[in-house]
Image (cartoon, rainbow, N blue to C red; front, top):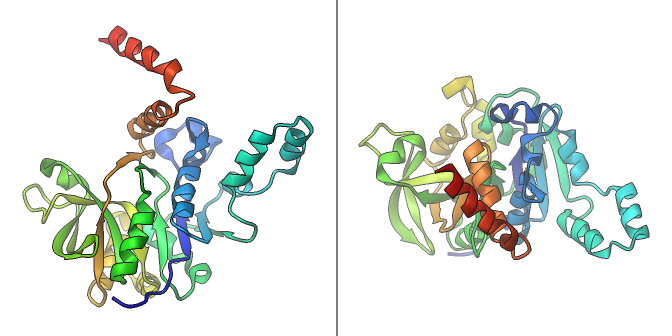
Length: 295
């Protein structure tokens, strides 16, 4: 298929208010709520790191300075750990951080939607393809979703969207794609429909919050009229881009937890806790007991 520009940068839109988690999010950004012992945003950054991303672009809002502080060295904490010979903890902290100079922060000054948040990253991303990871969506799989997407992108070029299968009677809740010819480890996307009416969906593959997009999307978003919710919608921009560029679908086979919703967040905590050898033995029987007691 030829050579394609490498995907080096990833955008993380973290400006959302987190109203579904009030009152907790009065003081703590929703992206900093913890799943077991790591903030939600760390799981998503880890996924990008695994995929070889070199530059991490956070689109923030007011009161999100905690995220910027989190991805910085905390001298006092590290000094104290060093004095107490807490070498395992020091190693853990250093392994979580992007390298110096590889994290950038820009503000989305008005809550004008996902498309607008992506557009706010244009000067940092520049004229190259980029990954977009929605931080509410936390994923579990042997191979990270973004890593698989980049492997497909290297085969297909163009734009890549991660998709999963849902029950056919649930398609009206999601953005759904049409399935075309096989491309490498994925397939050509023939159409994109946001929350199709029952019985009209082109497939049961829904968009799950991971994208690789070409920089031409920025010019489209800049002049795009506001759509649903009086916001600049990313899906509208992608539909326009699809008129001149190919879109491929990467079929993610793993677990996805919507940590922007209470049920998804709680399930993520349970699933990640049960996957930990140091935690599972102490909670598995307790969880079974709780379920039995509540029947």
